[in-house]
Length: 303
Length: 254
Figure (cartoon, rainbow over the protein chains, first blue to last red):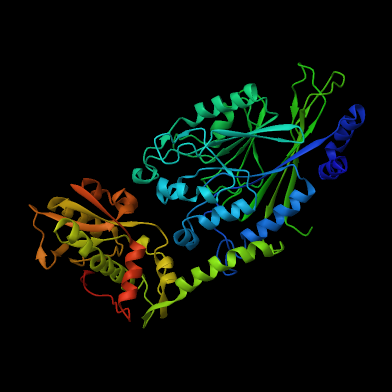
């Protein structure tokens, strides 16, 4: 069943179908598939945009996203769902209910983990803390130190998941709060260097946790033209073990993931799907049981 | 499936020269796609049902009529002052001054906002809380800054040169046709360079928004923690009819 799904999937890229076939036939490897679904910067957009909206007419809507996610989970139960932050702020739903509905709906959608965006501090650290009872998903941040705040103990640097024998490690990264969020809101939250914390965390996930797949949920932003600020593209080039960075903050609509060469010369994917729940991103990782010889490190990528 | 899926395949193929060894998980391939959330997707009934009471309560509050606009109020109907700008600046003055006075014993001298901060017209007809959200979608609060007289003078130069109808209340600026300052009054009195003035504005502008850099020279800043939008809503609740016109608070002589 999974093999059929794999062949069907690969058939869209005709040039590689032969190659895929060779692997399966010569090794008879059992293929396992992990599906990663993701959103970012949904900003309290619960209802679809009105049909007369100038930018996103009749797009988005949580109830539609729910049925799509349900369909995908039926196809592949080995699915994880993530959000890269800025869940809050953008519609009166947030002003009226303080993020309660956003968190409840994300729990119903069975989000597995999120990272924290700058706007998630908009009702202060107290406002975020107040919504924790409605969150049945993990909140991850490797570079926010909440130890002197109400949020102490509510946020982990990373979390691991094992699906079909494949171990997946996920960590979060947040943007510098000074100058972006009023100190009165984020209080004693400490922002640590995202590059260093990402490198530390991915090493723990690789070496200590022995993860097969490592994913970063980042709200630091995709790319900045003029400023020398941390970004996902720069981060990707500095990492050793992370396979995928799911980004946010810059509301960047990417047609497809950007491929960046990491520190080891391997490829890291950086993806972001715009904002307001207009898109759902999906990355499928296929695993087999074959080992590789140490000298065979060539990676061919076709987009 | 009828879904608009942008589909493409990324292969990460590790070229293997050796024989197959099992019991080792090996990432062999990555594919990616993106689905647009549009009307081709069925909306989940369970989710719709869950959202419905939140939505109806929200709409009930947002759409209940608070006041009436006898004509459309816009920030485009005057060169240096407009019906919308005057209304919002006057609202900030009337709603924030009692708060400032109760906390400091002092009065606000005048209000300065930015033209770009008014995000929507107020259409002729019933005015609701939703109207206030349209006009002011941002969570900006009213802050009162203390500015020295010579900084106020810089501010007037900025307003003269900006060419924009930045909303003001409590001051009058008259420019000659050659753009030279003809007169400047605060609460009906000329500027006193030795005095400190209390200026109500948006926290956005105090942090350098819209190039109003003179706010960085504030002697003190007091955040009222009162959202501009809430001040607008509170005012709408107090009045039956919104009466605002383009007047002579900021004009250029011909």
